[in-house]
Image (cartoon, rainbow, N blue to C red; front, side, top):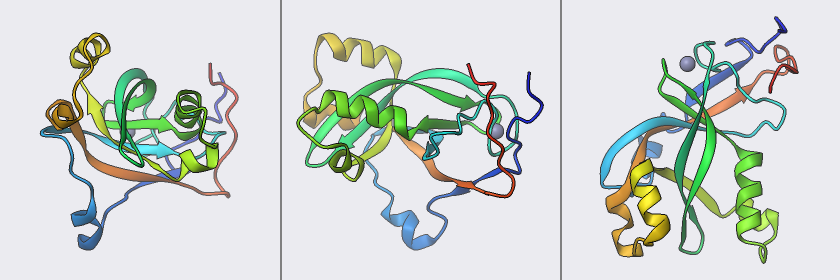
Length: 168
Ligand SMILES: [Zn+2]
C-alpha cells in the first residue's frame, strides 16, 4: 500500500454543463431514465482507485457504454469503468476507450476517432447481452439507452497530484 494515493484535493470534478446555455445543449438521446454522473478521464497516468470527488475507494464496474461516432455510427462498448457508489460517478479512462474504438474502426486514424465520438449513456446489461445476439435497429436505439444524469470534467492540479503506483 502506498499512502500517497491521490486525494480528493488533487483532482476536482466539476459539472461540465454548469451554465444554463450549456445545459440545454447537452444531447438527449435515451428514452430511459438517466443514470450515473459521467466523467471521461483524460489523464493516462491517473486511474482513480479513489474518487476524485469524495476521496472514497472506487469499484471496478463493467458497464455497456453507448457511444456515438460521427457520422452516425452507434456502438455499445462493454467497458470496465471506475465507479464511486457515494457520488454515483462513473469514470471512463479515455485512453482505454479510444484504444477499443481504434481497434473496432481500423480504417480511421486515432486522431479522427478522438475528435468524433461522444459517450452518450449506458445500456443495461441484460439488453446488451440480448443485442449481441439480435442487433437492435438504429431507430430503436433510444429505447434501450439511459442518458447520463450529468457529465463532469476531471481537473488536474499540477501542484497536488502525485503519481500513484499502487494500481493493479
Ligand atoms: Zn465519490
